[in-house]
Amino acid sequence: MTNPVIEAKNVWKSFRTVQAVKGINLKIPKGQFTALLGPNGAGKTTLVEMIEGIQKPDSGEITIMGKHWRGNEDKLHHIIGLSLQETRFIDKLRLTETLQLFASFFNLGKERVNEIIEIVGLEEKRKSFVVNLSGGQRQRLAIGIALINAPSILLLDEPTTGLDPNARREIWDILHRLKKESETSMILTTHYMEEAENLCDYIVIMDNGVILREGTLDQLLQEAGNLDDLFVSLTGRRIND
Image (cartoon, rainbow, N blue to C red; front, side, top):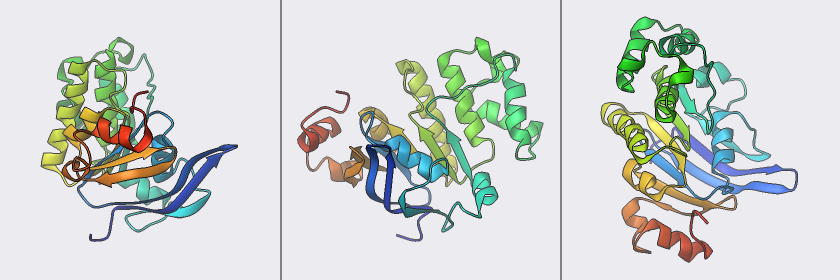
């Protein structure tokens, strides 16, 4: 592997009496779409929040493009796009106004806003207030905001949770096009087996703060017929239990 765009070395993180992440090592190469797959409470979100710089490891280190967060905040914020588990917008702003607000943080103008609206397929909702968008449309807006600065690294924390199957596939289509047209590296947290299989080159299965298995889909399926069966064999329970 060439120098990874993201590297975690022996990372630990606890919250009071809960050890959320336990000595994780992970490398993400340029252009790879990686799924962090596991049930609620597996440690996926905590790991991603440390990569995002929102949380700090108790021990171990995380580097982005070879740089630590401390002292490199401005540079790293400009190369990362992120969508958190729950995104709240200003209800009485229109869709275009919302994107213009976030574009202004990167000194970007209307041209980039128009590009994003096209990328996420919300042309007909340009003048709609955010409060009137459906759940799937709000999530497409969140993806658009994550992409506004044309990031080298995209971090998505359960972007399709709670969406109906059609809305989920609309998000997938956006990400498939991104992969085809760019060299963006992505980490996607999910507890949907099908989502990990459909979108990602590399799958990391987590539970109780540790990595149980990682590899390509083909490599992982050598152990079991499907990812859910593999998770059962590793933990004795199904991923959505």
